Image 1 (spheres, rainbow, N blue to C red):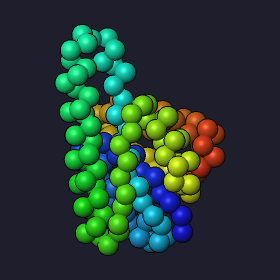
Image 2: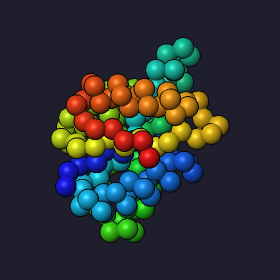
Image 3: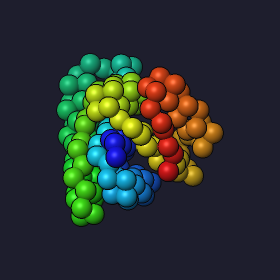
Length: 139
């Protein structure tokens, strides 16, 4: 028993990850927290008026995607929490892991057409583990 932190972003690949982490939380009687990192650093390269419009919309999208993840968990009998935070995924996961005293951080396997390969994701997982002290699992 512990607390599992699961990074999610929506889409088919995330649904598979959510289903697997829900099963894991149920099996281990663990608490579950779905996390969405809103990283708007890319907007620093654009006109300021766009920032005013985009940030709130990204937050709303993140909240909606996490609500869907919570509903998936509820259908399986798990009451999951949700956390939307601003920053890079690395920063956010370390912060949330500390805040919730996580026993595990879960990352989804990369999609075939994705930007990161499995080796890149494993390197990221190793960095997260080193920085947070929390076990990181790719599923």
